[in-house]
Length: 369
Image (cartoon, rainbow, N blue to C red):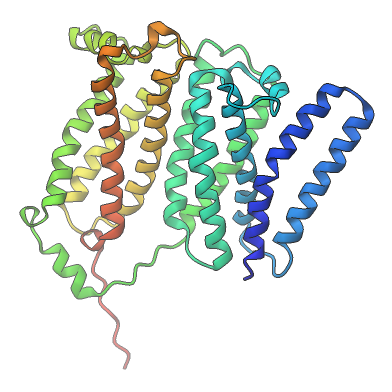
């Protein structure tokens, strides 16, 4: 397949920059000619991109077109985040004034940056993989975890937080995006994973005891306090009256009590899903043949990376009220604990994906008569 299709998707994503600036400028001009010109410009932008994408053979995978549109929206989200922090101006001013107030919270800032940077790179990688005919299941599963956490926390936080009564038609449009993305998740899960490994190699890896796998032993040691930490923060947002909970909240993470409720929802999601994950991972690291470990670590590491990025950023962001920001004296401990909590699962994911022999079930090769 020609690389022109992937080039067209990349060009389409970059076209969002003049597209946003043009529409924002023309909306404020408030004239029929301006809206007509804006409409013609939009058609021209999509026509140029479509010419690149369909110049030769069109990609057969429907996710190519979904990811192309998502890449366009990711750059828009990056523009939103930059304009919210007054780094740029005049690109999405109209949208920020008319949009739901949730987007102007510290959490909204962080997910705009995450979608505009990390998700954007994922979309480009998956678009390139489709264009070249390669598998993108691994990066797709990482995106699945990241997207699901982002969507669950954002939607539930909007519903139960202080902005729960401010729901506009734009929120319904966001639900359409979520519905399409859930369909994409199922498409990615349905793609087969076929590691090409020899039977003898798998059997040799499975015979190794835990003492001969020091890296796995370190991960097992990490899993236990990580489980305790996610349960501990879950109890805090459930208003546990323990002195330890109250002291930790006041000294290190007062953002857990923020009335926007994103942190509360995030900690509950972590306790209900990451908690069981750590128990299952403990089993998978000790018992050979757990083929689901690779997929599970990919989804969870993507989810935790997005969650911790949003949580750390929102805890320190100036949009968060001062009383809910991390105190200056507690920032070193806060950053150390939360960064470790985010980074170690990435290392575990890399270990499972780069050396999956221990997690595979031996399959003898059938002899042909």
